[in-house]
Image (cartoon, rainbow, N blue to C red; front, side, top):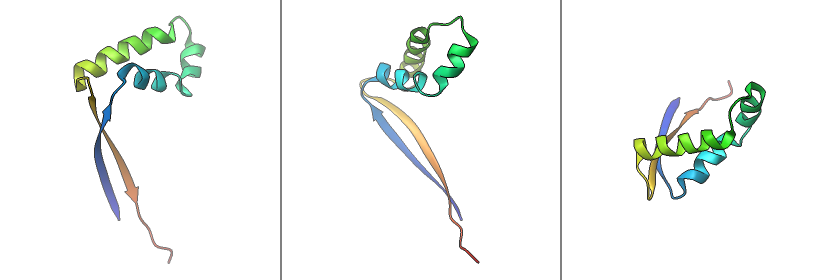
Length: 72
């Protein structure tokens, strides 16, 4: 059986959320490619999130796809 669980999260600190996305394992890709300050990416992400989802708080939709199986 497959089910999709949707939920909207209230993100109170949009810059911190954007920073957490950038300073995850993604940071290694950013550094390998070079030429961009990670904080600039944080600023652009923050602006894009606020434009798309609002702020104070930002309502960010997420979902999980669950797969259930039974052992034969």
